[in-house]
Length: 266
Image (cartoon, rainbow, N blue to C red; front, side):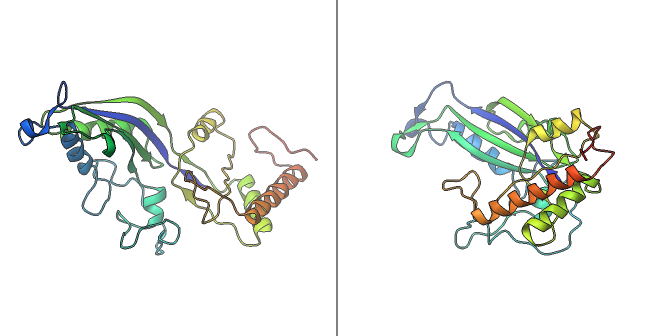
C-alpha cells in the first residue's frame, strides 16, 4: 500500500422549523428540513456522480493509462453504472469522495403527515493525498454555506479529521516486503493505493519521519469489508502468513542502516 486517503467525518444538522407542522396545512408553502437537505445533498455531486464541491474535484492525476473497472468486485445492481470521471485508480486513490453514511429521520413505519423541522446526516469525506483534512473540511463548509437553500440553518457537529498518507516505495524495507509477498503469493507484488483511511498511519509518519511504514491488509475479492458476512479465504491468509514470516526472516538476516535508527539483528 503506497497511499491512503484521509477522512473528514461529521454530523450535519439542517433545520427549517422550530417544531413539526401539518404537511397538508403547510406543505407547498413552508419548507421542511428534508427538502432543504435533499437540495443540498444533490449539490454535492454533478450529473455524472462526480464530486462537485469546489477544490475537491480532483487533486492529483493518476499516472496509469490502463482501463479499469470495479464492476466485478462491487455488487452493483443490474443496470447501475460507475460514477465520476477519470480512471478508476484516480477516483479511488487520488480523488476526494463524499458519502452520506447515515441519517436521523423518522422511519417509514413511524412516518406521519408532518413537515420535518430538522434532519441529521452523517457525512464521510475521503481526502486524497496532497490535501490536508482541515483544508477539505473548509471547502465542505464553504460549499454548504453557498448551497443551502430556503434560509435553512445548519451546523456540523462531532467533526473528526484523519490525514491522508503517501509512502515512498523506493525504501529498502519496502523492496524487501515486495520480495516477501512475491514469495508468499507466487507472483510479483503490485504497488497500489487504497481508498480507505487509517488515520494513525499518518500520525506515525509525523512522529517518526524517517521510518518506512508498511501498510498491509489481507482481503480477497469477496471479503466484503465492513459488510455482513465479512470473510477471508484461508488460502489467502496462509499466503499472507508465509509472506510475513519471509519478511521477518529477511529483516533479521540483513543489516539495514536506515531503518529509523533500528538495526536488524544478525
